[in-house]
Image (cartoon, rainbow over all chains, first blue to last red; front, side):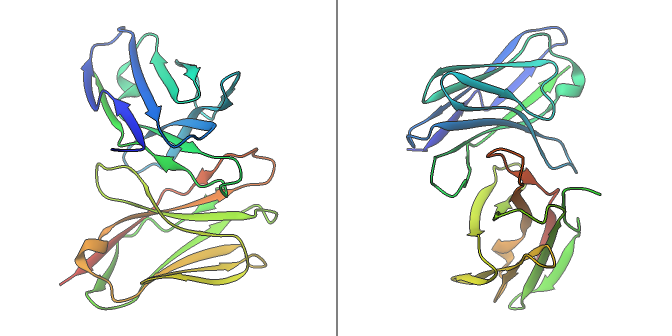
Length: 113
Length: 112
């Protein structure tokens, strides 16, 4: 079974809709991250969390919110989706003392029409 | 200047050759460096991590770090068509907490 899972894997939605992307991990890691990736651009950090009570904004948090429901679960919400949020979204995890190596989920391809 | 820079490529090498991928970073105090491989439409996969100056080898992959010159490179020996992918360099910058900053990646094409 995959260590980091994301649901849904693909989603098409309309402008103005609220959407939630979910991430779960079985690696026992404390730290979780949400990134987006656009063609030709690198990975941009949206939000990150170092434990259940710790939430931090990344480079591009506007238009997004997150919830850390448990150590193993980290959700990303788009409150009112807009077309320029069409992208690949990745969740990643890392553990303390693990050399800061991050491990990625399979990604969610989101299309906002 | 971008914090982590990579040539976008594509870098084309013949099968069996050595592919050399380079990455420069702006923060002289950075301590942790990573190479990820990403196939089109897939998630990044960790290949190597390196923390000390010099070379680190793992199978056909060798990571090289030169902190004085602020660059890290990845060599792929005996390149195979299955190595064709985008390679992302990631750096843990000082003052960035425990976050990684990613380069935009170099596309590698291994030709038959």
